[in-house]
Length: 128
Image (cartoon, rainbow, N blue to C red; front, side, top):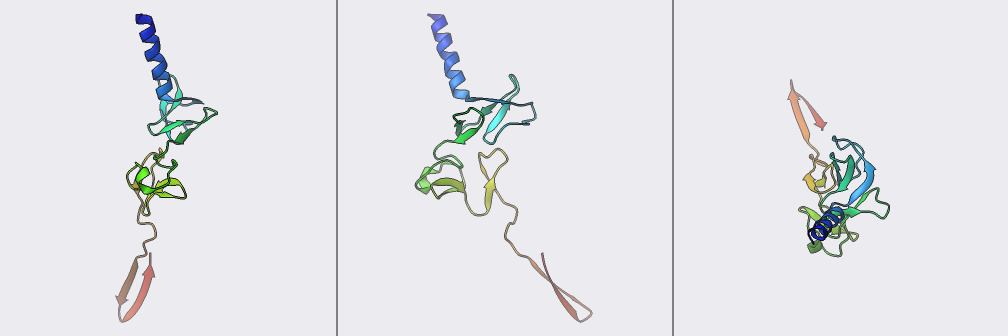
């Protein structure tokens, strides 16, 4: 009986971690977006909100997660996302982080700064 319980727990753990066939090192080298390196066995594992694709060589976003399927904004459960073209994407002014699991504020993208300099009666304008 204890063996069956242990076997059931092991099976549940294997299914929950969404292990991939992709190998990696402890620096996350080689892992696809939406996964992390399980250094203990040298394989990539899908992160929360992702599941393995049919080929077990990449991770796809779950419905409502960043890059996941949606039909309305209230389905997108990642902070600072909105539903665009049936996909949860980062809102304007935000971009996906390196792992592809969250939205982070973009560096002043699209902001124009103008500087006017007045020196000895001459004026010059610069746009940064």
